[in-house]
Image (cartoon, rainbow, N blue to C red; front, side):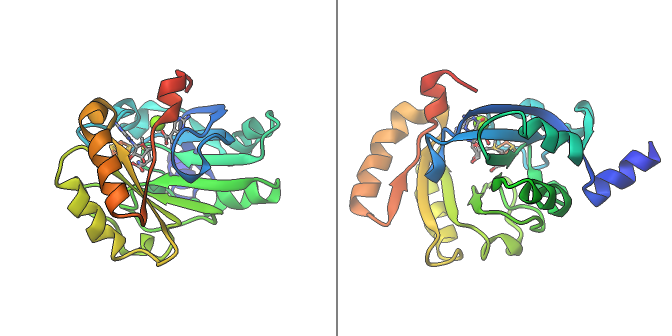
Length: 209
Ligand SMILES: C[S@@+](CC[C@H](N)C(=O)[O-])C[C@H]1O[C@@H](n2cnc3c(N)ncnc32)[C@H](O)[C@@H]1O
Ligand SMILES: Nc1nc2[nH]cc(C(=O)O)c2c(=O)[nH]1
Ligand code: SF4
Ligand SMILES: [Mg+2]
């Protein structure tokens, strides 16, 4: 028990809610086959979160990083997406080092609310009103993906855009249940603010994980 706790703290064992080979549905890598590793545990509490069952870390089996990487190696794709839950609740240095050793391209989906760790080829930063980001995310983000659930989210998006790198891609993604209302507003916004692009949750249209 104590050994497991220590291993989680070191990042050599991690709680895994699920892992699955699918098509990246969102963001810059939309359409790319990828192996998703969904770590358990999140303390952000987004009211519209589409994986609330991930929040309680203790609910999910703890796996060694060797077992996690072995799972990824079973599929032909060499792109891994680490998501959650909130993956940066854990030290991701050991897992990403091992994945890199095996030749994977490694992307992360994060709210950026915890100190940054790990080595990534692409960092998707999706800031949340429910918990402020940790300063360490701003220099790391390759993609700023803001979920639009309320009209105030456009201002929220611009506020975060001021803090990321100049070459960071800026994406607006409609919150799934409010898609009908906000997709048209996002289209208008992007046409008038061409430095922003649209991201949709295309896996939900395709009805795949
Ligand atoms: C479930 S989160 C896990 C990773 C991390 N906790 C985060 O929020 O970035 C993965 C992505 O799904 C987005 N997302 C979650 N629920 C959504 C919803 N109902 N509609 C649209 N996007 C959603 C998040 O903003 C994030 O970009
Ligand atoms: N297909 C697919 N693409 C995704 N992109 C980000 C996801 C996530 O939940 O982090 C996700 C997901 O759950 N499925
Ligand atoms: S930060 Fe991500 S996993 Fe956590 S509640 Fe928000 S959308 Fe869900
Ligand atoms: Mg998802």
